[in-house]
Image (cartoon, rainbow, N blue to C red; front, top):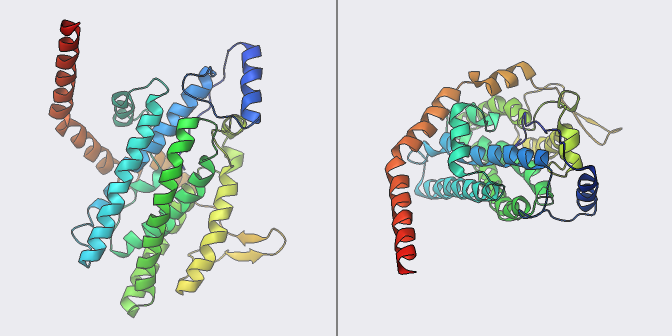
Amino acid sequence: MYAQMVTSEATNDDPAKLVAFQARIDAGEKIEPKDWMPEGYRKTLIRQIGQHAHSEIVGQLPEGNWITRAPTLERKAILLAKVQDEAGHGLYLYCAAETLGVSRDELTEALLSGKMKYSSIFNYPTLTWADMGAVGWLVDGAAIMNQVPLQRTSFGPYARAMVRICKEESFHQRQGYDIMMKMAFGTPAQKAMAQDALNRFWYPSLMMFGPSDKDSVHSAQSMAWKIKMNTNDELRQKFVDQTVPQAEYLGLTIPDPAVKWNEDKGGYDFSEPDWSEFFEVIKGNGPCNAERLEARQKAWDDGAWFRDGLMAHASKRATAKVAAE
């Protein structure tokens, strides 16, 4: 989900260095910031980690507006903790990207200008409280499916950041499923609300893994570099295989009549999402694209005074240090 439409750049580096670099990757070694790396590897990582970081930050928005409307004090506290976790995940990832020579300001400017994206799922609205369950269960479930393998990715700072993120995302997925259980085993109206949330978030969740492998032309290089650990279709299949039995336990129906166990492949058959919708959302034409970017632009503008203050303080300290020497 964090490599949606991320292109892998060709490299014109020294062939001998490229061979030695690939040998390290193949041997399972971690690449650290001060190590030599192909420029294409560095740029691809910046795009993927940057998109991942932006997704964590923008991902707070669909849930943040439900904190004050959660049905109980306990639910408010849980949701608040979850949203706070997402901010922390963004911080870890921006820090990992900075080790590649790009500043957080540059990454944010790329997001606001449209040069860098975030996961398509966050451009869908959260209309009811049941959507908080669907987001936790489906969206964070898909995120975990993507993130667990990234703990083995070849770039050290990214892999290490993913260890803590995965632990916290497991909590997020469980809290979402717990909400869905309460709704599905509650009143008929509550169960209907849970089914409606599943209906609306099912296909957008499948889109999170990116286009079908036959249309994802840049995966091969990213996988050779172990920036990406699995193909889009592999992860999508694992997600479906995990989620269908969970829906059955809840007594909810996956909104796809093609969902059926296939003994030969040892997994469920299912329908492809509407990829034309996916590409429209990626282009900026989703239900909430403008709203999400407006919120990030406002946050950036409102925080200018604080960033200026930090820079002024740092400059003052640096000047004082030079004078003392």
